Length: 536
Image 1 (cartoon, rainbow, N blue to C red):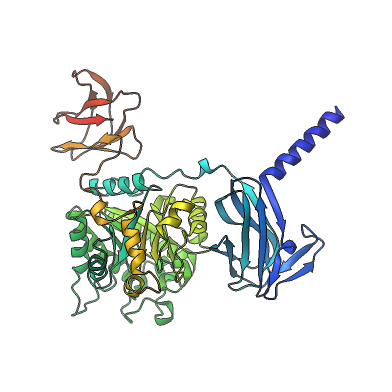
Image 2: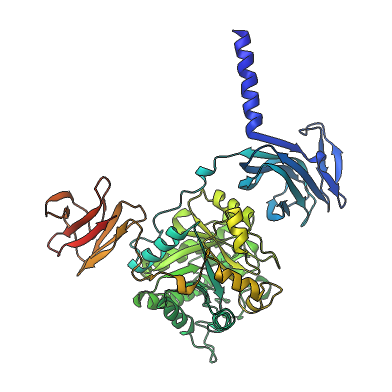
């Protein structure tokens, strides 16, 4: 018996080593002032004080595998941000004040081929202490579990179709985009230089509602409607100027507006924020009335702290997001929005919650870097449990399609900022634009489907009179919505024989077609005319 237990113990040890490989920091090549220091409690009895230096690990793996990558690290000198670079791709990781060593996940679902790899920890701030790095094998099939419903209740048909398109396209192709500063200037420049236009345009409510005599408040709405009518996707952000109107600024260092007053409903600041939200809601309502869906990305880059909505920490910003959601959706009746949170490093405490966010974006500004940003992609995918599509919501330089394909970085879209980020070769060359627009992996405006009639790949939409029948994001479920109270919903086969009946409450229902063979069916709600539904 003792022998059997010993063999089992050895087997378990070998299995553990096979799935997690540890590399001591002191075994790395140190440069720039990083030093090896004895520490009895450390994994190998030594740690590396990074100071303002760098660590380089030259590693070899016997077989291809997918890994989560950790750093055993302490940060005795306070909050610090530094970089992990894997074969030239980098990601920033942040450490809070902590003299004790913690195992920090830095990269997730990183695929590494058999052979040699270069892994570096490089200083941004430096001044952290590193014990070791660890590579944990993971199953790549567990990577995605994307949300199949929008966070907004009773979404409009148009936004359902747009989200369905984003869902169907995810990890298959990337949607090209561009931010436009002056109305369509960047889009027109690209058209004149490449012959093509991006599929997505970035718009901003920055100048709206401020009483500027030189600005037409309807300009961004008009651009959104015109582009959507050409099958383009409108994506809005809001550089929200000082709600108090004491300044026209939005940067923290240029306004003293206090977001923390969001907790005091009697304060002037609270009332000013509500007034601005109501005004922007009115503009978004006009788009809804014109059947235009919107990718909506407010309070962006909050945890960076450079905008007033991030100046007082996580709690008031999170409260403002949730209040905005409630005010827009439940008070103003906006059901045409896809809500996008813009992540910053170390912002987990800022995240509004899965029930308030459809997609997570990352604003990446790395001049001249056209890598896939695979480390960022994998980190964000893992951080939100594989449930949220992730995207490059802003960029300076954008990834080369070849790198995206090679690394499997399935960003939903990319969108360089306006002006020089579009036209200056320092950021993105004209040759790269032409290459991207010619790539089969990159969707341009001329390649977009008709978003007004877009349907899921397995169910085909139909409607008649007050009854709306459209697919959910599950292949074998359909939504049924009526302007009237529904008491009974029945499904008939082609012979007119009823095969399923449900009794929903209210004007909405979901019915499953699971187990039904392919073909045409009739869906009838009470006395409404029957709607044809095709299951492929």
